[in-house]
Image 1 (cartoon, one colour):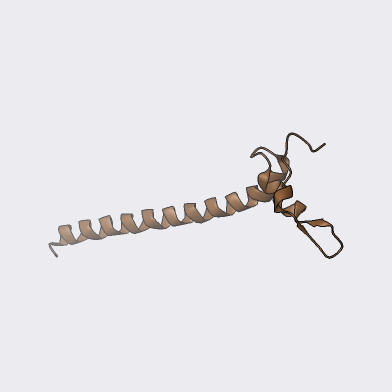
Image 2: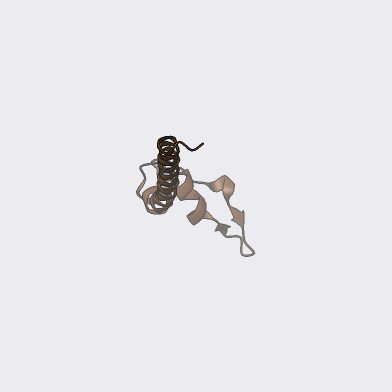
Length: 81
């Protein structure tokens, strides 16, 4: 009987030339619960990488905005448009 905590992915298997089911290692972790340790092992590095990219983009946007405000203030103080 399959583990009730983690659903099996039998519908995603295909049979190889010997009749063995394939892709269990790929699909079972994907179908597992979010707090599943396998999910943490596979998805945590991906989430961290995406979060780091997003944070870098947000920081770049913030720097650009600060630069534009500083430039506008300088132009105003110098009387240039």
